[in-house]
Amino acid sequence: MAIGLLLWIAPECLILKYTGCYCAGCGTQHMVLALLRGDFSGAVRENVFMIIALPVAVVYFLWEAVRYVQGKPALWRRKGFFAALGIVLAAAAVFTVLRNIPGSWLAPAWAVG
Image (cartoon, rainbow, N blue to C red):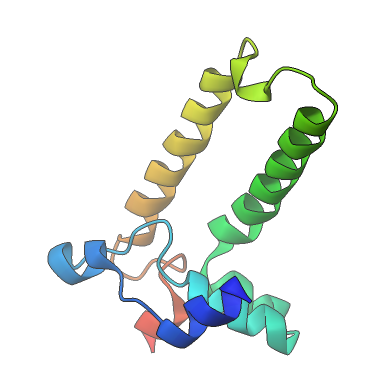
């Protein structure tokens, strides 16, 4: 339901609005819609980074929830968590830079035309 509400509201990207640059999340709504239509290649053209990052995030949060219910300590408190988070954020930054190079195939398909 939350995804449906988000797609219905369709908020604009503030980074794109104020800088003219595509962020790592630009095209995610179009990607989700393409996935709902069963168009995986279209989803990849919209945002290949989120195709990978969102399932990983869902698995992480489910894992955290299971650990919480079991009374185990949170994963984010484990050694190496912040290093892994830094790698993900660095990958998002690199993706953002690469998708803003003129003519890049990483730019959102809706922006290319």
